[in-house]
Figure 1 (cartoon, rainbow, N blue to C red):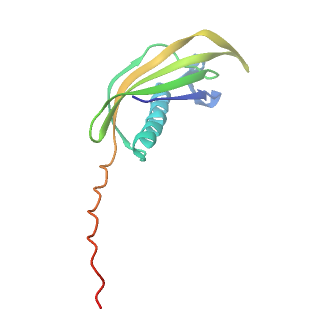
Figure 2 (figure 1 turned 180 degrees about the vertical axis):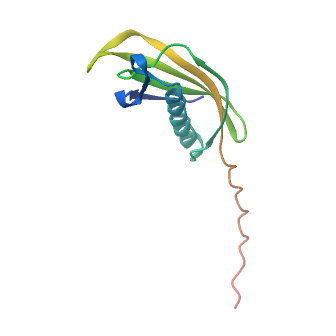
Length: 134
């Protein structure tokens, strides 16, 4: 269907735990940004996130990482879109300002979510031509 991918650097100001770990909500917020772009591209509206069916935190996200966040529409209803999401670490911060590009990205978070969009407006029927009154 459609896939949208964002890349994002994780600033050190987002580290919440020892070892510069970032909370899982960071990935969920990134999924929301990707979902917004998908809705705009498909429907011309930002849409609203309705639910997550499945969220899996598979590997840590750390400050200094560069993430690739993707979302792929897997099912479209009249007003709903089911999206499969994935966060991959493509660069890992090592220390201070140093980082390395990973040979193989690390899948850090995956999820399936549902967004909803407003109904499409119903087009008004064309007005019949009325001859001018003389």
